[in-house]
Length: 507
Image 1 (spheres, rainbow, N blue to C red):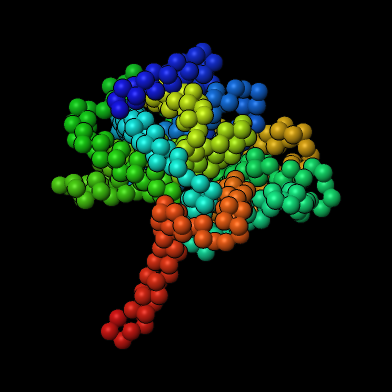
Image 2 (image 1 turned 90 degrees about the vertical axis):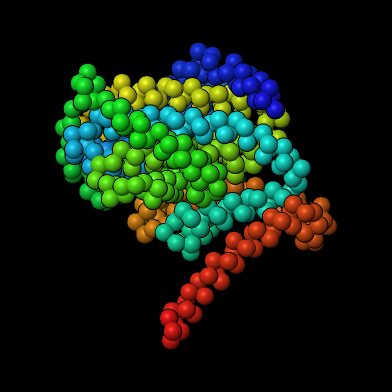
């Protein structure tokens, strides 16, 4: 077993250390950190906007770069959390609880260095666990047929969509919007056109890139403008790693030695579970650390362990979310849902057969994540003064640049003006969804997976001559169906029980 793991890693490193792969890995990591600096933008938006920029690259190199943006943004998002109490995205919210108080105490430098080290340890432990678990999960899933795939896709969609919005109802509505967009094009069975309105450019369907860029890129910008972010003055901050006060003390490392490991395990588990992701992982990691501490009253007042715990967790979660993506073809977060679309754009079908059919891609990507974490920890520490200067740029100057990138990206894929209009319509939709608590990530996820769900469902019916027995005949599909029913029924029963309990006289 260990021999196979080391052989796979050696094979992956031979692909990841090529000059081209290393160059684009460094570009992705650097861009990811900058993406993380812009509040509200997040990794999903960064990946969506920059997917068109990877056209012409070899698929493995392109995905390595996009994955670098994904986990690089986790590093960058904490810089603003610590310095100006503004999380780059939801996964770094927990880092503000003690990160910003540390900065107020004059310990911004040690906080930034410790978050870089925590991110490196969490990300590396996450990748080690990917290396060990992904092949096992893929081997188990290799026996899956169309019925199992349909149930897995449905289960993943249900878990994600009910956890990504403000509530389950809004999450499901968001997913239904994605399904509706995905019906445009040609019916997979009859070959008939659906909702194309006579436009030949829509026969191939609505391309996910234009929708993703609109929902995440334009939608996020509109929401930031709505909140007046473009009116706020830039904050002038200066840090120098030449100063002794910039570096953590020995006690910082000693006190956090077990926190590194605990946060990594909690975050990885949260990342593997569809719908949990880095946000929940970081919150749980912080809560567990506070409960285990002998001095919980210090948390929230500038406790280094209160920063290390969520940072190790959110970076381990970003790695954990790659496990179901690579082995089952089910994204574990909004950002990996966009990555899934990128996989399919290059003709790569994530799932158990991916490791068998294209091992060079899988192990090259996994090996690049080891290298990416090494690059990012160096960038996070020694380029902190440079990244801090990005905060000096007024947001009103950033907006037109991002809009231009979005328009160029949407148009460049197929040189289609219709996709540019789709971009802006999706942007307005994304703004409305963000404003009212719906989930753009669930919409993109349903758009990407909706076609796969429809296809596998129809294949299952063909195999069973039109009956639904195919979903209960095999043990795995029956177990998945039971889990699916439980996911739907249990929350309803709990809600009814709580409502009855509140209405009872004794309650």
